[in-house]
Image (cartoon, rainbow, N blue to C red):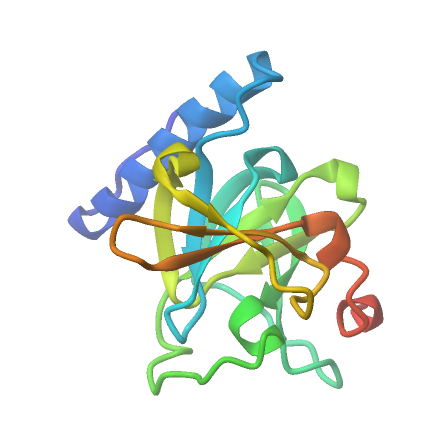
Length: 180
C-alpha cells in the first residue's frame, strides 16, 4: 500500500515509514543480516533497539479509545487498517518520568508481529530514531542485574548507551502478563 503524504508535518514520519518499509522488505529476503534495528526512546530519553523481525509495521494515530479499569501503561485501544490494537506505553511500563505534554501528540507505535500472538502496538513517547546500524556500535557487557528483556547493550560514537530489547522475554514480564 503506498504511503500518502497528507500535510507538511507528515514528512518526517513518512520518511521514517519509507525507510522502515524498505528495511522490512530487505529483511524478509535476508536471514543473515539482523542490522539495522529500529531505534526508539522512552520519555526519559533512554534509547532502545528493536529487532525488525519482531514487528509488522509502524503506525501513527491520534485516535485512542480509553479503556477503564486497566493498568496505567495501557493507553487504550485503536483501530489500524481494520485491526484493533491495544496501545502499550513503554515509558509508563518502564517507570520513566512523564513530560507535561506526554498526552498531547500523535501516537507512534510499533505493531508486534503476529507470531507473538498479541494485537499490541508498543508506544515510545520519547520518539523514534528510525533505522539504526549497530555494526558501528561497541557491544558492552550486559550487567547481571539487567532485566531479562535486555538482550544486549551497545554504545554509539557519542558514548550513548542503547539497550537491545528481547521482545519474547519482555512479553513474559509480570506487568505485561496482566494486560487484557
